[in-house]
Structures are given as structure tokens and as C-alpha cells.
Image (cartoon, rainbow, N blue to C red; front, side, top):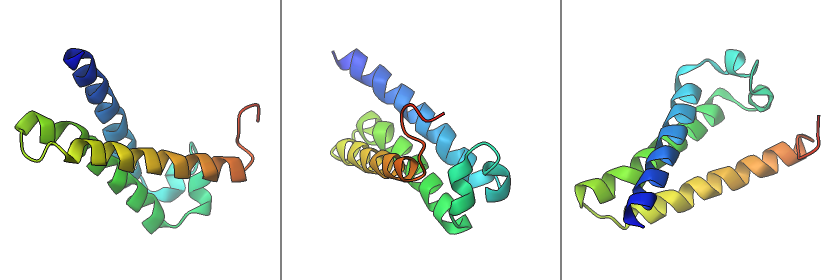
Length: 101
């Protein structure tokens, strides 16, 4: 079970690190070409979301791996869940829900 949790945490960390670094390094206007919601956000909002995703990715694996404050891993997971809940709200408000086309 522990191995499965490490694999899952690692995969999630890679995914969120990639998403976060993309939002941090790509100009918002260029990002909006593939992520239309970015056109409605400010540069600061996009960078903040990217920072939260990157920090969450680190928080999923570093504390337990280093044995320093491992309680931060569930806190990072909760933070990422809240970011994703916010993403659901944004996409639904934009009419980009399931079945939208």
C-alpha cells in the first residue's frame, strides 16, 4: 500500500509541477491560446495559480521523503484539491462543463 501511495503522489506531483511551471513560464496571452480561461484572468492570477500548483507538487513529496514535517503532505493535497475545486467552478461558469463541446 505504501508503494502505491508513493507512486500516486509522485505522478500527481509531476503533473502539478508541469502544469504549474507552464503557467509560471508562459506569457498569459500565449497561454490563452491553449487555455481559454487565461484570457479572462490577469497575469498575477495565472502566476498565482501556477505558484500554488508548483508548491503543492513539492509539498506532496518532499516532506515525507525528507522526514521533515510530513504533516505538510496532506495539507498540500488539500490545497491542490481546493485549487482544482476552483478550476471546476471557473470552467462551469464559462460553460465548459461535461458535454460542452
